[in-house]
Length: 173
Image (cartoon, rainbow, N blue to C red; front, side, top):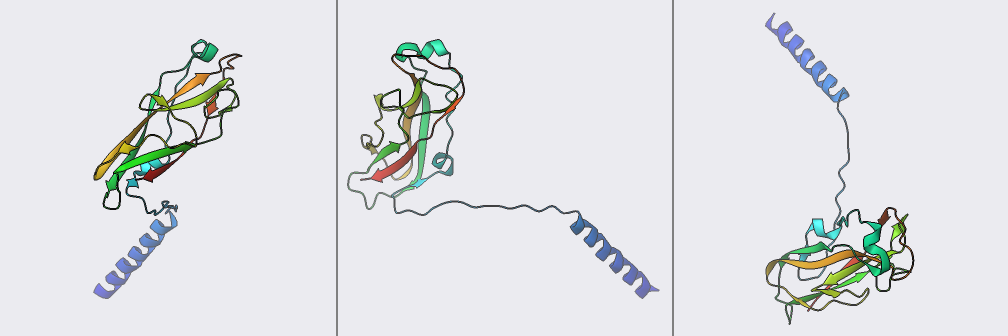
């Protein structure tokens, strides 16, 4: 009798296990990253980030007006300065230049007559040109920049959504 009960319980357990597997869901986890020879790691949140520049009134951008600058932070971690001579880093931003706002990053979307300007230490960042060197220390560091929307000096500002992409490269000295 005990053997029959054990077989019945074992069969019920196998059946229950089959039922739970039949109702299981599946998914995928993708891991991304890279390995480089730089002095610091870049926090994942800083590698690919989105900066919300807001909903800007058209009149604020007329005749070369600009929006309020928003912070753009690049967070570094685990910096090792052993192989550096100056303990500094420069940042070079690249992107498609604006056809209407000199020095700005071009935008895509329905909005027109605008570009995205970036700043570092109160000065405009020139696309493709390294910024002034920023001192870094061992451990974690934050590189601080700003971004704002700049209107065309002469011409119309066209309301609509926009987006822009800038890439950055760090060079350690």
